[in-house]
Length: 514
Image (cartoon, rainbow, N blue to C red; front, side, top):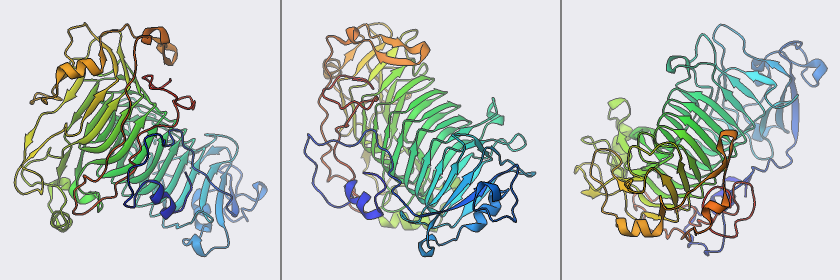
């Protein structure tokens, strides 16, 4: 399904007005981007023995600096005879008084991409913070990005207004240990499309390890996100059409994963200017050791949260939370873009920030085990109805539980009388049927155990789930998005093809492994 052209991928994601797919069809829960077989011109770079005046066509004639290598790459690769591959030999490319790389305006194609790779092995080429702006078909493979001691707040990987960006086997490691010595955001993508993160590690962030704002289409798979003072992974600002699967998220002080949150109105892109997140599949992930919810949906539409394993999560909140997203003008300044978006039908009020509802959030067949403490709040935190101002194109009353499904989840979290349902914060909670919730989920009824979590084995011991059966997952119906402007319906199928180990799913057993 990967590596397709823009239109091919769009059709696959259901971006045309297609009907819902059959219930027995699946989506790929362990995808890998297909690089194809592009024609490439090699440019070699050796930070120790290279020479920027050399030919750069072989290891023996390598350039010394990445800046010199970037200069060899045409801006319009569509008109070049080939794509380009920058082959970085082992060594550090962190140089200069303000180390940092900026690559802008390299527009490639599937047949003529720009590939930047660590040629001597994964993470052998060490780079400073890297910004990729207005680029197409740019592939980063096997690199290591590190923070600067003098400028520790720099974003380690920043993707701006780009498309078809592959980040594979990349480690972004922040050296700091306190909020003041960590990058504000470790990895950040803004207003970009077709983003693919595979087998990566993002270690250390003041606010977020990986933050996608107003980005559409792609996947985040088999990666590690840890050591964040706020969130592990966030997709917000109208981000849409992502599969987030097979990842491990831990040591985040608040959220593990958040679908939605809050965004400045003018930073969004049409037509995704209503909900904070659309069409997200969060499956087969392991989330552990978080201060707040393992998973939060805040202003999300058609979000699937299924077959995840959560361990020692939400000491100070609820393990799974569904609530509202925020929306306000960025930096508090209402501008012409806000006027344009509001006139087009987008959602934003000048009077109230947290008004973006959630709709069709399906939470099924997840495992939650808190074996040494009970979460401070209920097992599920669901926000209650909210009145809205008249100036934001929203209904006068919005809800976070419209179309909400909570089934087949297995939770061991404190004593038997620990509350199953409560508010997200100190506000009102939903009117969800608590008796039905208790019937359709196993909450503090089984002695759930994991194999060896202290050693990183989070598989459930099957004997502890002997009497538990997961729930069938319905597909999304579609056809219930705001009409002005009309966003694509997205991928309606909710049947993951496999479990965390890549084994085809043949049943409904809860957790990341079947």
